[in-house]
Amino acid sequence: MIRTTITLDDELAAELEAYVARSPVQNRSEAIRDLIRRGLAVEPAARPDQGCFAVVSCAVDQTMPELAKRIREGRLARHSEILLHTSIPINHGETVDISVLRGDFARVSDYAAQLFLERGVRHGAAGLIPVEEHVETHAHEGEEPHSHTHLRVQQSF
Image (cartoon, rainbow, N blue to C red; front, side):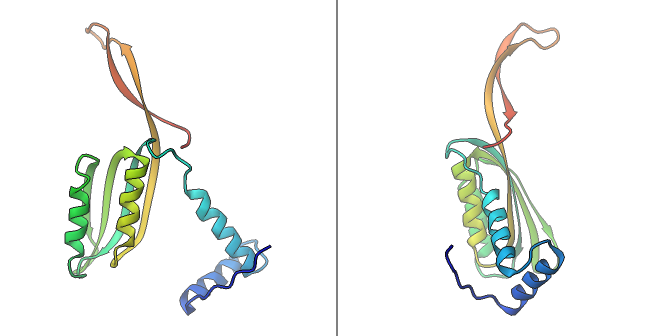
């Protein structure tokens, strides 16, 4: 077993103690191992070209100089992948931003990672849904049979 030392600020240490108190773990070390396992389990082992949809959300401090411009430029650089973007005001300086993207795993994950690293962006989350394209031939009512692409949600990446 490897011993690792970490430093936590008072607020995060208090949250960790509260987690230990309400969960079945016996101590901080078990709690940290549990939290690390959960965090790593969220990271899908997808192929970089695996198709997916993503719902990317975060809180944005709109008062940060140049932040809104950088976020807008990041969206414009992926204009063909972003299907929807909305910004919901929380107060006079903060918003909840939500984007829905469709693209390959590598590009969608990269967009979310870059966004979450911006100073002034907090509570970032990306929900990823793996999809694959399937060509199907069928006829809709009153039409001749034809082929077109359908997306199918996959069980996992």
